[in-house]
Length: 109
Image (cartoon, rainbow, N blue to C red; front, side):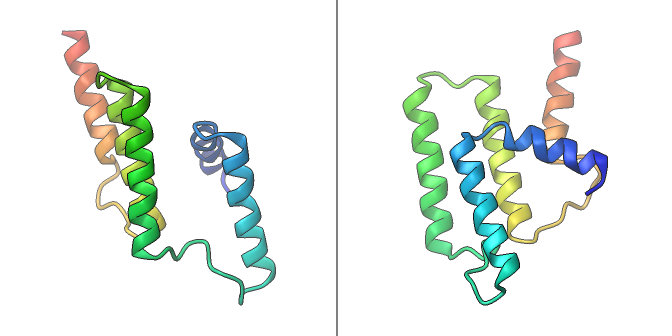
């Protein structure tokens, strides 16, 4: 990985519990060593729905009011799911980046 991708990966991974990251790394390593193993990049629609439902329920349980951090986290999750499903962004700036820049501009005014 390039230094930029490594930095992004490390920052993104730091937003998850270490046990979760470890589990994901083991899943990928298992698949890389045995291509017949379950591909961690191909998730069924049901598990995607359950994952999203769990994430949103967890956020709802933890936060009673929506904060800027909640919005950024939700957008990051959506982008991560899109990337995991093979969707590539059309523009250099992602939706999260676009909104972040807009909020930064608003804060500076």
